Image (cartoon, rainbow, N blue to C red):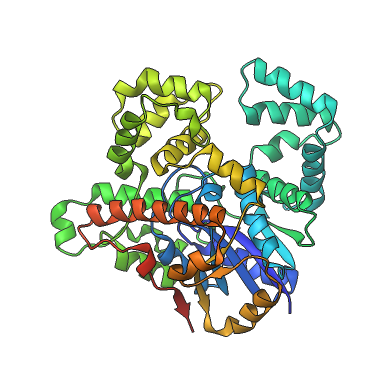
Amino acid sequence: MKITGIVAEYNPFHYGHQYHLQQAKEHTGADFCIVVMSGNFMQRGVPAIIDKYSRTRMALSHGADLVLELPCCYATGSAEFFALGAVSLLDRLGCVDSLCFGSETGHLPLLSRIAHLLLEEPAIYRQILQDSLKEGCTFPQARSRALEACLPDIPEVKEVLSSPNNILGIEYLKALAKRHSSIHPYTIERTGSGYHASHLPAAENDFASASAIRNALTDGMELESAASIKEGFFMPATIQRYVPPSVYQILENAWQQQFPICSKDFSLLLQYRLLLEASQDYTAYQDITPALDRRIRKYLNQFQNFEQFAALLKSKDLTYSRVCRGLLHLLLDMTDDELAAFCTEDYVFYGRLLGFRHQSKGLFHQIKQHTSIPLLSKMAKASHSLTETGMTMLEQDVRAAHIYESVVSSQYSRPFFHEYSRQLVILS
């Protein structure tokens, strides 16, 4: 039995994701596919447009056999921590043969060579990196400059590092190497719109980016009047040809009932946390550097909403995504000390099961035989199988889920669902 792993956000799921799932099984010859998926908050420091249970159902309907939640501290971390958390989870299951990720280049040897150099960090690389940072470059800019100098025979290095899926791919390869993992990497070239493409493609057969789909949904929400919502009008039909029919059905059923959710919806919660912690040290939280701490204090009185404040804090050496991650970690009460403890004790301590297909019972048998971490299917029993550090991580995940759910229930005037009462998504 062969098992492949995929790391994803599915925010939301679209035809490009379906293609990736199909190609992953085909390229690896896998019988089963385990997806490690971000929960209700994303790597760019923003909330998911729709909740993790809806996205789990989307994935299981289109090729995934089992979906596990990536712990929130990694799902909302930098590319390095995102990859380390996801790879550690797959590796500790003990039965995953391969990891299949998408990349803009589709060239595994090139990505592997860059990953190896980043792990090795020769003296010349470190020197150019530090000099570039002192000159005011952002870390991504400084890293790109250092790599170009160390790999003069690869003229496309800068282009490779400007593409988000390539960057994540390199981090997956680094994480596999750090763990001395037996998991074999594969990459599939990304097709269709770019990761950051903000508009839906005109060509009939092009895959849309998740960013473009989210933009179409949130733009449609702003255009709808209160009267049209009461009359039963649904979300923009413009996205219909970019997502599978069952995904569109899930989105249509949830429209203005539990989604869309965006960063602005968390503005008051964030402002409260910023004011509450103003007398403390903001740098205690993940991704908040002394420079970001100073800017938060300088501009705190100009806070209007989450997105506006993040844009205000952005600077030459602080990217917008980095700022968003820092603010989100403050909002979710996720500290550097907790993350350090997780990393010291081997990164992940459980596999939080979100859903599975009935046909994947053989997969559970394989996991049970080989895993070094418990598979959590019943939250109420978690304390019996987790260490103190593992429970701290799970409590972070539950807190993040409840903060997200509180916004959903308030935004759409619906009951609040406690995380411990949630049912697994099970498809036949």
